[in-house]
Length: 129
Image (cartoon, rainbow, N blue to C red):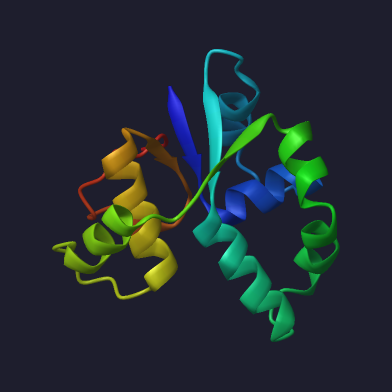
């Protein structure tokens, strides 16, 4: 399965946080699955860390390459087709980071690995039900 890790899932997996659900951890360590992190998630982490709203990611941002390597996670840049798709989603949810993840999951054939219930009615494939 091609997994697009949402921001919290990535942070929790990289830091060994107990909030990472066991079924998500199982999907992440399964060698049959590929893991990808969107630049949108890094952008979100950076903004929240800079504003003091998510201090625990500040150190991770300095060692992001190591965290990506440790989780064997690829990088997904934001491109123009994804930006257009995110803006055109028929979805009431307004969070720009979530909209980008939804668009990238759809365009890239990913299943989004998230615990965020905002995605339940987004129409995109979710790795956890």
